[in-house]
Image 1 (cartoon, rainbow, N blue to C red):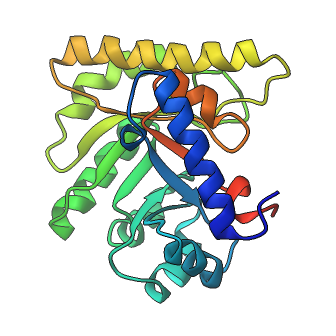
Image 2 (cartoon, rainbow, N blue to C red; image 1 turned 135 degrees about the horizontal axis):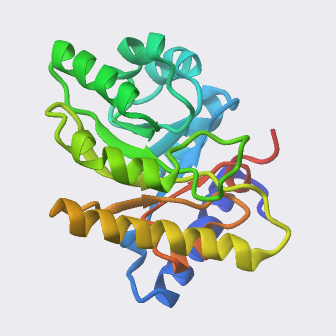
Length: 227
């Protein structure tokens, strides 16, 4: 068993590389987002010392407290639901907003981004597992809004993201990942523009997600330990 964050990171990276190879891709095709939510800046600093540069946080307020204490050249992803009253605080902190789940929220982000002269990278969150406990677009609703979403001038729409329900049958988990990949391809064809990123997979299933096409995996407990 890994005994430190550095050891855990090394193990996760090796497993990412093996899963990427099984999907016919190099390890560099998959970005590891180390989910540091609830862990102190010292734990993030330990991961940075082991070479990790990309991190994810769930809450804007935690990012406000943590990010300024860490190196300025790290890349930060907001992977939790973004409330409208937190947009103005979130955009200067986070390079990626992975959880845009409505046209209304996208328009709000676009308006604030215009005022702040920034262009955040955006992922559109899809509730591909149809889980009432999860945020995200229903696939048909995303199809209906897609042209309006990608037309927003201050958002760089880069792809799709999902958080899956916990399934007892791993074949169902794999099917959800495959459906998100298929939806991405459909939207690319309709929109005539690339959507290069698929953010899917967490500590319990990131290898399967990579095998089904994930380009970003969000791994927390397998790196930092239990919360």
